[in-house]
Image (cartoon, rainbow, N blue to C red):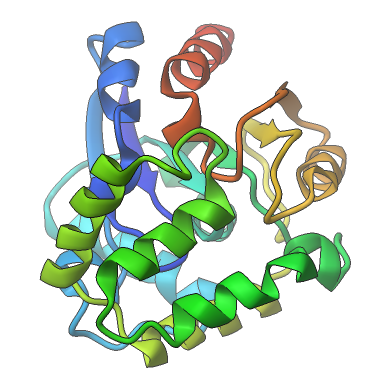
Length: 247
């Protein structure tokens, strides 16, 4: 099976942590593909699209350009989950399944559920950190992780990545704008929702609403933060392996 992994807001393929290795452990015959949207990772110098539709089109075109034939199993976290939904809706013939990790949608959730306002100060610190990459990454982990907030080895590692692939304030805001306007499209493929009950960034009610909307399977981790693949890679890979076996 061909699995396409799509990260979230201003994150790139290097931020999946140990999750890809865990997936290969549970799904040894799978082929993993990683897509960074414009503005992220190696494409950090490009302007980010300001709509989820354009981001999904970019993903579709990337796979086509690289002659990687469908069907694809999509895994998207947060903003990546929105891209997954749009891609699956408009290119249904390509997509075998979609996994949505701690994602959200404006038509199903209140704004304060999609972004916990208690995090505004941390977000402000991130946006104003300029070239202080360690501070930026420490802020991101404070927002998204429950297991690595004081992991200075990881913070330093990601700060080096951020210095190598710096995200611009403009692209950050364009991606936030795209996410804020996203609404759920009709989807006719198998969907699975993975959610963190202890997500301090996005309320777990958003994942519950998406699962109810699509009448999809949903499973929860009790302690992980928003970045579920980072906090609990083995658990998530195991859950997905079991779910894929039932398709």
